[in-house]
Length: 251
Length: 245
Image (cartoon, rainbow over the protein chains, first blue to last red):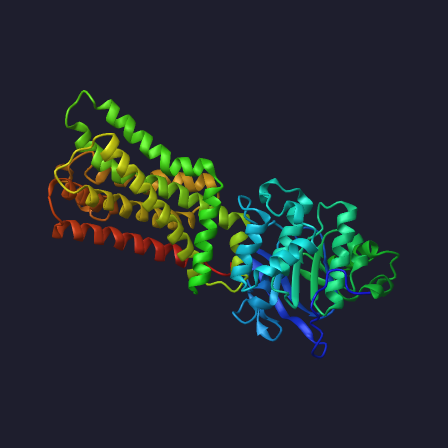
């Protein structure tokens, strides 16, 4: 069966770390947003970045895309320093805010970002079709529903067929049908070799991920396969495992 | 920095303004209407509109373009689109250049529309050149754009951006020679007025309304005005950092 969304495979080379964070700390004023975090994100894998609000998820993602300066440590994206001119075209970023122009249509938004990313116009049409935005292509973004806005924002992140996708809470506020559809898309992208880092503060979403990275108050609680998390701390669920690890860290 | 990305950014900003009828009205209709009101107010006072009209012709583009540019740029900063752009392979110069080009086009359009109405419809009569007066209006619009871009970097909300207006523009309006001749100001204020770009706009307007041809003084005043605009643009550009601390 052909892939539903028809993405190009990124699995030509050997499986390697797409993103590598080496002992990264970020201090925002008096707050340690990230503290000595060392973690890698692999190609062809969906990594769930989990933690409550304020745990450092967004800071970590912004550091990967290069919009958050790190206080110490280093980050490489496909062997290029994070945020460098070499790394920026390789990473698709969907921030928590829609980050679209509300007074432009869906198509106008995509066409503008496509020009910035050197993508052909045909790619815009392709994504509008694939993300089922066709009927709303000429609607102003300010008039879209939450789900349509999310899909438009995701389309921008997918424009350049990046080998790395950083998605900050992409399914927040979506209805269950749309959420399932997006997770299908993420799995297909991972199957084609894309490295996906998907943040969420909803523990249920962890079940969709291959690997989990758990953050609590800027510190790394867990980094490993999803299936091994619960058993590693003798917990019944991922949520219980998180609570057990966070409590242990505090004590 | 690439010409294609800069033009794409300018085109995108113009498309946003095209969809925003209130901003279009603020840029083109409001200044024209206010000058018409001024002409109407001064109908019983012969010669007054010729004195005030020309000077105010240059002030409106400055105020309106400052307001529109500062709010539009700040919206880009706060909505997350600037961060998304900066995570892409686009130069800071492309973004800044795009803004400068788009608002310069709008500023030129505004200056032309307001000038045509002021001279042809409201009957502003000057001994000098109407083209040179209109050129001051264009230079003022560019200055308003540049100052608006710079001011947006100092504000965190749209309300704060609007608050910048009295801080940055009002002292200039008081000291530029529009209300009180500068040589009648206290010495300290007269010296201070030299540091304010609007002073050179008023000087250039006075020169254009009284001399029949292009004078050396006019050229110097316009050059200083453009120099201030360039400095404000560079200052605004320096605040456009790719990553935050």
